[in-house]
Length: 245
Image (cartoon, rainbow, N blue to C red; front, side, top):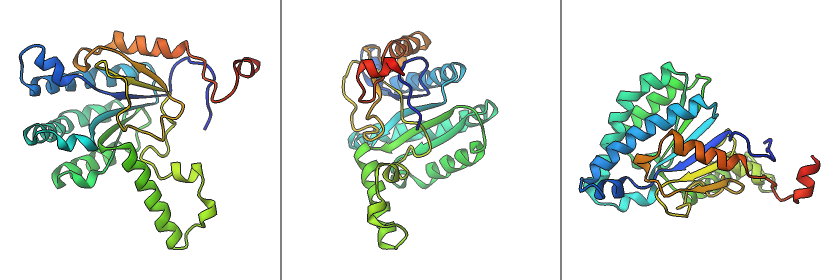
């Protein structure tokens, strides 16, 4: 994978969309209102990233830990996924975006999985930005799942154990085939990665902002990209080595 030593425009942006509930609470609204506004922000950020020429955008929509939230909220979120798929998939397809869902999708309802699979099939040959939605996803699950598949292949005699290296494991992760994220954005003021893309974020530039997700727009996105553009990405080299390249 080619790595850039200067900032510029990130090829792949990952986002932890945090703050929907707090946005609603600050306005004495139900949490559902915050999630509804969050969906509107998703639409805007997808459009802006596509306009900026971003190759891939990965959104952390629902983590493996989110199953522990109140049952009513989880049910509402799953309903929102279905509604958003029905409302947005044709537009995404017309605009040439390729949609991909990653995570432990077996935990989802059959109806939701069928819609997801249909959306991925519909957009599979598109050549525009790849939009990755992480649902029921956890970074530790991702690594364990890849290790389990490699163990299965070893047991089946398909590969030898000494053939397992970083590239082999990476090829079995959820984001296989995509460049690792160059930039991670987390909204809402928290400064942690919350079990998101643990393997893929090894050399990602991290950007944390206080803006709650429903209030995050094109201006805030451009501020994150501008921050990224000022970074010198060394990948273990010294500044002098990078400057000599």
